[in-house]
Image (cartoon, rainbow, N blue to C red):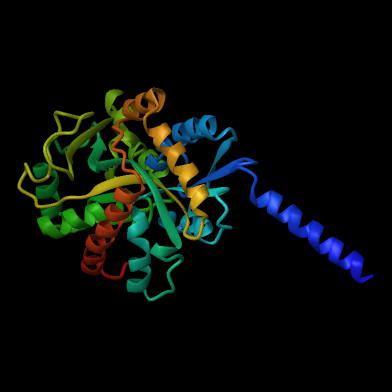
Length: 321
C-alpha cells in the first residue's frame, strides 16, 4: 500500500513538473477589454490581439467586460489566475479608479499593485468633440456658453472618474464652468449618444471619433495635449486657447501581479512584436492614434507617475454620486 502511494506521488510530481515545463502558451489567451466595443481600448486591443496570436502561436481572444468605468474588467483580471492566460488591455482610468473608490468611501475594486504593466501602445490627448451642427465653432464659444448657462451643457463619459469624465472636470475647474455629467458604460455608447443628440459633448481619444469627423458628423474643438495632433493637425490645444488643462488617454497591457517571469517575458516580446507590426500601426493610426510604445520598465515608471498625478486630480474632483 505504501509503495503504491509513493509511486502515485512520484507520478503526480512528474506530471506536474512536465506541465510546469511546457512552453507558454499551450491554450488560447483571453484579453479582457473592460469597456464595450467601439472605444479606444477595443480599437487598440483587437489588432494587437491578432498580432500577438501570430507571435504566441495561440489565439488571443478579446472579451469585453464593461462596467464601473472599466473597474469591473480590471478587477476581474486582478483576481484571475496569474498564469498568463488572462490579460488586460486597459486605459488610463486604471490609475484613477482605486483613488476614486477611496474618495467615494468604498473598498477599491482592485489595487494598483495587483496588476503588472507589460507594455504601453498609445498615449493620446483626449479631444473635445461636439456634433457638427452644434452652435460652438471654437472652445472659447463652448466655454462662454457654459458660463452663461451653468449646467445646461451636458457631456457623456465612460463612467464616473473614467478617461472621458476626468478631462472634462479638469477643463471645468480651470475654466470656471459647470456642466452636467452623463455617464455611460463606455466611449462607444457615449459617442452614439452624442450623434443622436442625447448629449452635447464628449472628451475622448481621437480614435473614437476620427471616422465621424471625416464623415462630417462631428466637430473637434480642442485637445488636452501640447502642440498639434498627428491625426487632427488643425485642432488647437486647450493651452493654445488659454486653458491650463492637460490629460492623456493611454492604452496598455497588464497581467496579474504574480505572473511568472518567463510568462511575462513571453508576453512582453509578443507585445513588442505587435507594436512594431506594420498592419497594427496602420490600423491604429487609421483609427486616429499613432503607436507610442513603451516596454515594461518604461511603462511601469509611466504608470507610477500617472497614478501620483491622477490622485491629486481625483481629490480635487471629490465625491461624485
